Amino acid sequence: MAAPVIDTLAGERTRRTAPAPRNGGRFSVHFAHYKWLYLLLLPGVVYFAVFRYAPMYGVSIAFKDYVPFLGVNGSPWVGFRNFEDFFANPDFPRLLGNTLILAFLNLGVAFPLTIILALLLNEVRLSILKRTVQTLVYIPHFLSWTIVASLSFLLFALDIGPLFQFLNNAMGTHIDFLSDPAWFRPLIVLQEIWKNTGWGTIIFLAALSTVDQDQYEAAIIDGAGRFRRVWHITLPAIRSTIIVMLILAIGQMLNTGFEQIYLMTNALNREVADVFDTYVYFVGITQGAYSYSTAVGLFKSLVGIVLIFGTNWLAKRFNQSGLF
Image (cartoon, rainbow, N blue to C red; front, side):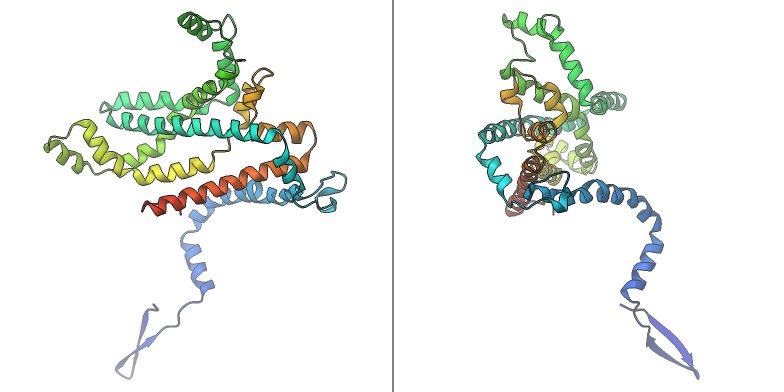
């Protein structure tokens, strides 16, 4: 509402209303006041514009028979033929199954462990011990998947790997963990847990820091044990954060990670190792089927969008705070 302007004329005070600034003027005042915050926002906007939105122009080749010599605009349209070929491909059920199995394993094992680790760290009262443990569990996140895969090869190397010898001696078997298809998925999940679980606790620890300590004191007076306090106070306090992170995790279900899967894939375990990400690489880059591989990637992205909106709708349906 416009602020009144007081004007004195001939000894009388009359009240007039100043005209409201236009939208352009309002924005210029707002921008001038928060110019440094907008400056900090600029790198993120440029990053998303260049690396996220600009490449969307090339998505159109999923509906074309792309020929590099003709370019994106000159290549002929084929409609949904690339999608039809992909769905009719005998590899589609296998790729979908492998991708979903790995996705559900990561979601069902790695995601809950992130919450459990955050709860355990939150219960540590010795400050120096808590910081030390946090640092140790954060470090693997900064290692590349190449290093993680190399460590896995050293630990599980046939006949000479220390974990290979220990596990086979304990089980009385002689299993090549790196080539056995039955052990591919457990190794992938273990790598994911070791590398990213500690880093994923940051958001949950931040949410836990906002829990009212008076509630814990009241619960202690009422005789509630530690488990009861966690179950009735801590988890309800971070429930909205858990739901938001779960929605984001479900939206990324089909992004099983190209580097990790590619580095751990070999000729013996390829039957269970092929997922959408590696399939796009092998078909699109090594075989030159650019339109076909783009259609596969676009299908995966559309499924991710549907999963995000569907999970968010379910959260709202059960009266929980969603992502939007």
